Amino acid sequence: MSVKLNEKALQHARSLVKRDRVVRDRRDDWSEHAPSADDGSEYIDAHGIEEYALWFLGEDTDENEGTKARHLFPYGDFSDVHRCAVISGESRAGQYHHRSVEDALKDLLGLIDEHEDDEA
Image 1: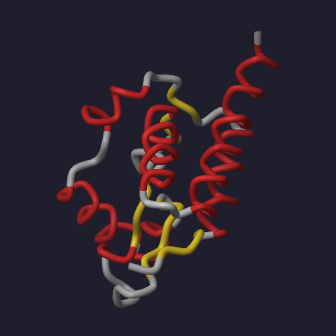
Image 2: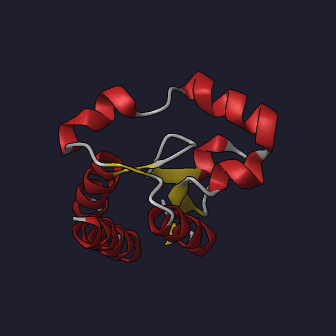
Image 3: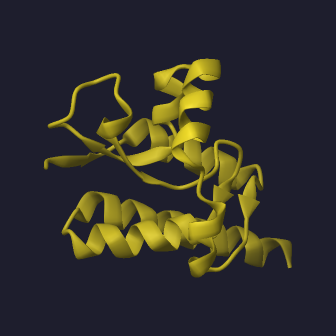
């Protein structure tokens, strides 16, 4: 598996955070909040694979383009960034040594927390 950072998805995530499109939940919440495979298929049917790809910070370049299998490390629910997804993804990226994705998720978490502090 060869995983690279999806720069367009990172830009999309940052723009959502700056617009306060964030669910500030806890790490363990992601198992309940994560979209299902059917949700992903419905999103692709409605918006296309390019828009779907914007919700994943990792891209497995060993997988075919235009497939769901190519997209890894989701950070949201196709509407908002979920803090729990970012935390979970950062941990998983570190576990599997996907450094660029791990660093991007760490920075995104910092942006989420910084943005929350600015609102307080």
